[in-house]
Amino acid sequence: MRPLVLSCFTTWILLGAVSAAGAQDLQPLPPLEAPKAEQVELGKYLFFEPRLSGDGGISCDSCHNPTTGWGDGKPLSTGYPGSEYFRNAQTLLNAAYYKRSYWDGRLAGADLPTLVRDHLTEAHFMQVDGRLFAERLKQIPEYVEMFKTAFGGEPTFGRTLSAVTAFLKTITSRNAPIDRYLRGDTAALSTEARNGLVLFQGKAGCIQCHNGALLSDQKFHALGVPENPDLFADPLRHITFRRFFRTLGAPNAENYRQDPGLYGVTKEKADWGKFRTPSLREVSRTAPYMHSGALATLEDVVAFYDRGGGQHPNKSPLIRPLGLTAAEKRALVEFLKSLAGDPVVIERPDWPDYQPRKLGQN
Image (cartoon, rainbow, N blue to C red):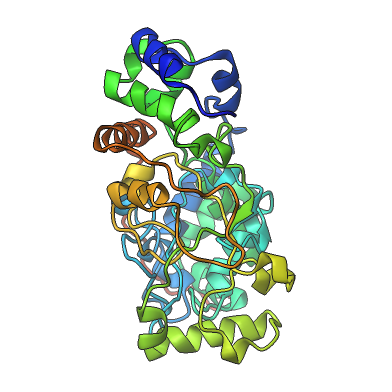
């Protein structure tokens, strides 16, 4: 979309409306097919269940906490005990809508059970053997009954993946002001947020990559985001970083001094330093930002783009200095805040306890 001229910008502010072209660039988030309620309920328990980790001490919500926007609120994520991770933990809000999962897109978004499996079994996430935790769950009568109700059988690795997947499909944006606005409720956005929308679609150029219902083109771009210094200063993160890329078969991985992003998956030089465009839905709840967690606030993010991003040999040609005024930056931040709907907060359930089983029932 071409940048708007000043007269058009002024007209849009007065009208407080989205152009026909803009309406095609942004759409309300469509509903997902509702999973079975019994599977969702079981998946909720398992999401918070530490017995799904190798040491029985961490759970999915250790890094994807409902109270911190379904991420962990840290610049770089904490890994499995005894290790640390080298990227920011992305929110699970609206994860079911992505075409590719993770910052580097290494898994297909449509295959959520594999995404769950990767989180459970990856050495630096939860490091559990699927055969082990299935046996743990069989020692808990309440879980045995819940699996029978949800799937017609006993706890298994595959059924666990399906249950957590069903739960993930319910962690979605709800009643966001931007969706109400796009459906015709012009009062859903404040005047300043509407001004920010005009900038988002025009002068600031955000719409080029943050479009559609998810507010993401779901493509990969290099922006020149600075590396988090802890990546190489912290030995545990450094070890995880090296091990990860050697496991992917990335060439010369022992010499990397920056996160190669998509390159680690494709091994194509043109993909060095590219990362998947994140959704901007709920973005005000998911700080800090970028794959390295290098930007602490929305104001920092807007300032980064206003400067034209950082330095990188593969930097996207879409990233350029914007020349935003202080008022325009505030308007953009206000619009970004309108992308968050009702809080999606789920309380940690009380876990059932192990119970002895009768001889012959194991």
